[in-house]
Length: 347
Image (tube, rainbow, N blue to C red; front, top):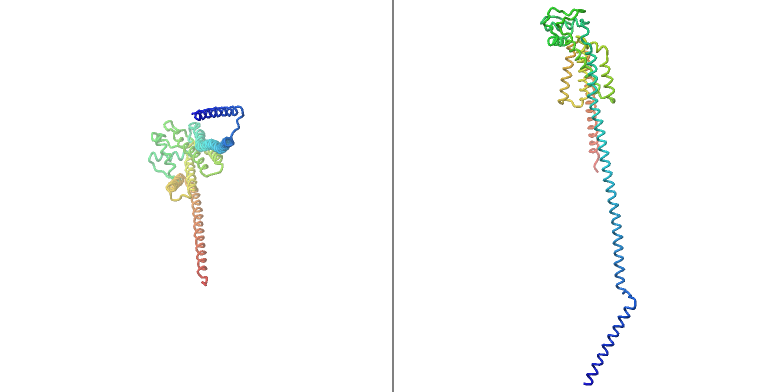
């Protein structure tokens, strides 16, 4: 029993000493400053390094993305600027093209209006029969009255005069008037309407001449067309001839149309045997027939067209000959080389 009691006492004393030692250790730990472990310090340092590296890498990535995005944005901005410049340039080009097309159409029309005004101005002020009106107005009246006559010139111009007298001139109502030179027109005959037909042909000649100057293809087409149309519009002889019942206005009009058709055929010389080329060939022949049927002087215009055709055929003939000669020469050279190649000895 005594031994058991002694053992229990020893155990109690050991527990007390252990509690005291633990208390002292806790006090020492609390009193002494905390010294971090080496392993924990390593982990914290590694985490801090990782965070710093990740932040640095993020910054670099951001800078790279900004650098990559900035040229894209600049490219997009440049493309937008180019598009805006292109649109403005297109608008300018369209504006210029519209201006040229409008001037191409407006210039001949304006000059034709001016020429028509000059020819219609005081058309009925001269009430007497002037110059060759005594001949050609009388010949037109013969067609209307179904009377036989003989004249040197072909009949087309006088037939057109007779048509104007039949439609507006009232020539049938006065069969006794013979259009003698220097006499006054009677009140029954509408001589102003007869002269108006000549004004139409003379004014239309100005339009055709202006279009011909544009079609020729000068570098400064505006000034060339303006010069030609102004010359035809303000020519004093053309204005005077367009005010009376004569053949000259019709002759000049069909001469101008013949030159216009010739220039159009020249522009279509590389599109031969097409529909448009055939159409303008027919129109050229029709215009030549008209100009020769008004006056025999129209044969000179036919001669001009004939000279152009002969020169054009001559150039095409020599072009064909030169091409055929070049083909023959190239074929002979090729045959010669082949013969030399096959005549070499084989060793």
